[in-house]
Length: 625
Image 1 (tube, rainbow, N blue to C red):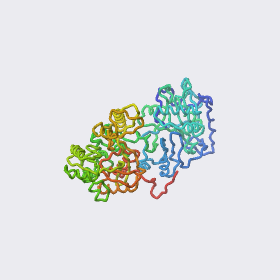
Image 2: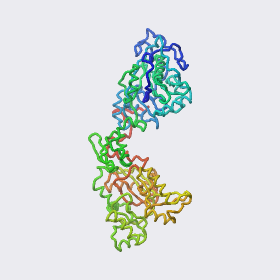
Image 3: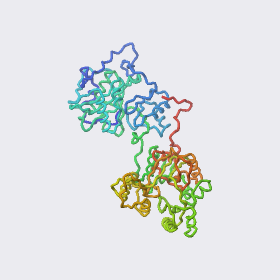
């Protein structure tokens, strides 16, 4: 059926749509199937009351996998005895395809069982009753210079796909379109203009040939035209020709589906004699269909940062109501049924104030994790006296950081001398009066996302670095890389050129004005914080079980439902690790392709969680189609 229809000036009326041709060839020279034989007076009445018996020229699918149309499958619901079998077929939809289930009995029941996976298509179904036999006369002359013919070869299929693409429709493999056009199950027609270009297309499906339809019906799909080149009336000409060919086959009716918002097409169909039926279509929720089942974006949505937007997107995908209560703050109010939860990015009301405070103060985090038997670096609260210097002398190198803070602000890494320690403590106190001094441990910076006490994602974070090209100096390379990081993160990640950057570059033996040799990789920051240009690399599949178990234990010790745990590890696939800190509001958008937002919304609204097995009616076994 059709999401896109030519709505040009009508050139014929309903009689022309239903009329027969004087000759047994169409305007494009294609042969027409012979008229049905006269009805047998001794035979029982046909479903349409004409006495003509439906053809039985195609094996029924028997509740099979559907009819492959290239852009997706048509799943005829009346050929299934169990709704669970329909669900199994729709769940097997290929990536990038758009399956449609039509004529399913009680489609609302199936959708109510699998609301996170299926939806009722917001379209209307229209039916055109076809004559029992071709009319005696034909006044259907078509459009001057327009030829309607059968799709013949790969060139035609390519042209059809170009029209599909221009109209935002799903394209189909060329060989599938060509093969389908050669079977009696499909009537795939194209409109060719005077220059020989294909400017329109329509696909008819003969239900009798597909599954021996006792109702003797047919359906119409993918009626669309090239609006830049097709003459007015091309869509109607295609429809007229299809109706004539189906009439010649003796079909009783042809159905089509049209989006309820497509009022122009609906007016045309009604003028041609189509009338509404109560038929509904079921589709699977996929990226192609998103605009059909997602609610309109709420006010303020476009001002959300990526960390709040990923939560809003997942909630809307499930039909959860989203209100943006403070876009700059990333605050949302999510409602489903009688449950309402306020979130700020990945922080929700389910995180208690106590759990949040445990993560907010890094000294408290260290104490709780140590008491839980977990590994943390040696450390102390800065006192500004000789005890700080003595600790530095004991461990050799330290990291100085504000006890409270985020995004890497005020942190100094690799402090080695008493003078540098004094300066680092002063810097940290500019962000928080309490300062933590920790032994510096070597290793990779690992972030692990734990939701509902299960590891969902893990990523190695690496400090900002630039690669020399033998042309640009270090400062120019930093500026270029900073622009790229900002563009990739919506402005969240930039590389600051500050004292730390200059110091890191100098330690590597360069100045900002030096041209970096081609291929030379230079780290320009010590910390891997995303906001200062760090990059993140997914290692979820490599994570060592010992690290995963420790992270779950940490989340339970902190009694926090959602956390981003920062560790230093020798390697993600090795067991050695120490915990650095815990974050109560980790950035879920940084961990694609892992399902962080999905698991977060699962936690907030367990009733919307995708089912883990195929729904089967009580007492019935699942029937795999």
